[in-house]
Image 1 (tube, rainbow, N blue to C red):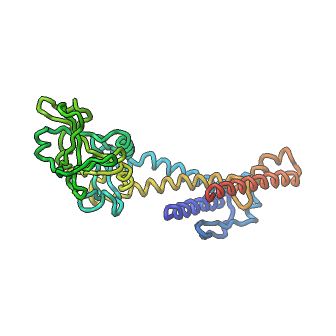
Image 2 (cartoon, rainbow, N blue to C red; image 1 turned 60 degrees about the horizontal axis):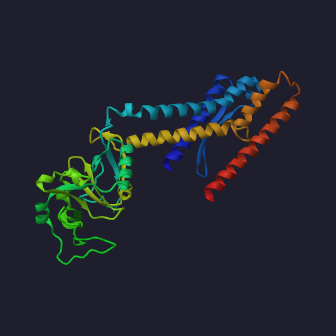
Image 3 (cartoon, rainbow, N blue to C red; image 1 turned 90 degrees about the vertical axis):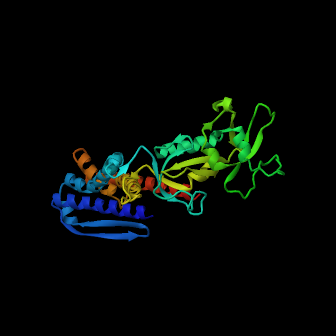
Length: 361
């Protein structure tokens, strides 16, 4: 809401400043200038001398009427340029292309807390997927949802030594839990050996296992040494992911990848110093997008030939310039002007009604 109000105020003020500057250049007196707020719409207005305005030629009037729209167009172009060169503008203070930085962690989420992720930390990888930008992060999340969780190579004798499975654990059709459910350090893994016809299960320390080399197939492990590929015994939607953040050991995330995705807010711009604010690139980028959207909307709105908008006077000035030489009768030109204004007003009203209907239906 703050971006919305600030953008409307900036666009409105600069729009009216355009009218005022053009009026001064065309030697039309400016009686006053002010600000107003109507419900949730902050704006500005400029009061021009009607006598002076009617005394100048239609072309000079048109310059004054179009000046506000022109200023809005300049705002759109400048904001678009800022967006395009933002990485270059922020290059002395922020690094890009190597990692993403955490700007916000959702409270009470799976990755919050002392052992979780912290604001200001840089994420470089998600398991075996490299993360250098927000697009990479989204791709890695998507891939982790589609692909099975990677396994890890481990020696058979080490599996037997580390196995902490209860002797009386049982496997059900709905779930496989060879560990104590309250355990926060161990996880149930499954593996296959040539001597056993079925998969075997072992309760192993998750941190120690994930530090071993990754494998997707049994053939990825070095068989002569007796290594096997152990996989987390999880359902199709639950994944075991490693989040590499800074110089700390990777965070082990157990759950749906989308839960991880929505638990953090990330940015492509990694500060080069602790004194540099994390959210500055986001603020500049968001404000620029708002300027493009709302200032562009004001351009379209104010060129529509509609009552009480700039388009009403732009239409009048254009008709006077274009038709005065061919249609000398003022009443005929006035009739054409009235028909166009009525049509534009009705068209705008219908579009607003349709938009409101789609918004609230």
